Length: 239
Ligand code: ADP
Ligand code: ADP
Image 1 (cartoon, rainbow, N blue to C red):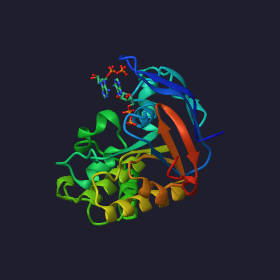
Image 2: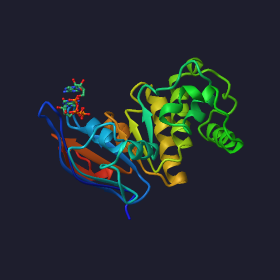
Image 3: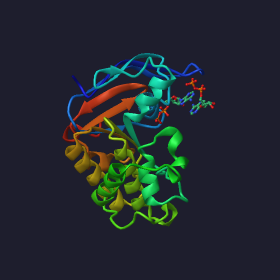
């Protein structure tokens, strides 16, 4: 059973724009998949269909065999909890501490601001400390998010996503706000975590060199279709 299987995915926006045209895609092992393609090619729509921020027009998205397209509101919330999101602008709660931000990953949607008052079980606290160590932020738990550098914020974002124990990681331009050296460090960390936790990652990334250096597989989008799907070494300039 594949970790992720996308079948005949179509998205037509209300404007009539066909942003995704019969997209088929399978992830059958933990790997880093980079999504590239020019602006307007459908990359964000694809990611948003998988995290169910966008309602697909038709097609199926199976996460570990379970369809996450036709769901009621409750099912939708549960499906989103199975996918860990990492954002370009980190999306941390700036006035909360690193620890509060990481723990908020256990609460999901409604829980973000409640995480100040919510009493977390000791195993969650322990897991959060372990994750902070793992992403290189040991000793930072009581810092406020707004006191961190961009690279540190993204490490918090990664730790928060992993607190969900996600079945899939989705990263939307995770390095676009970072300098080149920090970008490489973050991509290296993501690659290590994918292997350690056996959780695949899909990364929307405009920096093709960074994608080639750090992804196991590259998917090229053009006009709502996948036009390239191969290992980075086979990505030529014409592709
Ligand atoms: P859906 O068709 O999925 O219901 P909507 O048509 O409601 O999506 O659009 C969601 C939002 O995105 C609206 O505020 C809409 O104005 C805006 N939007 C419309 N066209 C574009 C576009 N080309 N790129 C990005 N956002 C757009
Ligand atoms: P990319 O991420 O590759 O730049 P997008 O998925 O954002 O591409 O957009 C794909 C196409 O769908 C574009 O033509 C874009 O203008 C259009 N689009 C994106 N969001 C909306 C929306 N909410 N409503 C209408 N059209 C949209």
